[in-house]
Length: 218
Image (tube, rainbow, N blue to C red; front, side, top):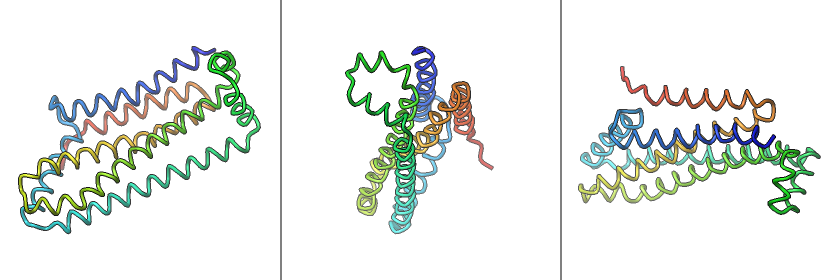
C-alpha cells in the first residue's frame, strides 16, 4: 500500500524537480538553445539599448509591470491555499487525519499512513503552492532592488553584466513559480485517481519540454 503511494509521488517530484534542473542546466550551460536562452539574449539587447540611450524609465515601467504580475500570482496562491484550507476544515475525515498527525510520533504516523493517504496528497499540493509563492516572492525582491540599480547603471556601463544576472535570477524564480503553480493541480487529481495523477505529471512535463525546446521565431 505504501509503495503504491511512494512510486507515483517519486515520479511526480522527479518530473518537476528533475525537469527544472535539466532545463536550467541546458539553458545556462550552452549545450543547446532553449526558449530561456533566446529570451535572455533578447533581454540583454533590451537592457543594453535602454542603458545606452539613457532611458531608465522604460526599464522601470517594465519592472513595475513584472512586480504587479508577481503580486497577482502570489495573491492567487494565497486564494488557492485558502480554498484548500476550507476543504480541510469542512471535511471530518481531513480533520481526523490532522488530529492524528498532530498527536502521533513519526513511527506511529508511518504505521497508520495507509489510512490517511488523502491528507498527505493535500499537503503535497499545499507544499507546491508554498514553493510557488516563495519563488514569486524572490522574483519581486530582485525586481525591487533593480528599480534602484538599473538607473544607476547608466553612470557605469560596466554594470550591465550584473544587471543581466539579476534579470536571469528573477526569470528563474518566475519559471519555477509558475510551473509549481501548475503542478499543484496534480495532487488534487490524485485524490480522484492515481493513473490520472501519473498521466497529468507526465503530460505537463512533456508539454513544458516541447514548449521550452521551440526557439523558432517568425
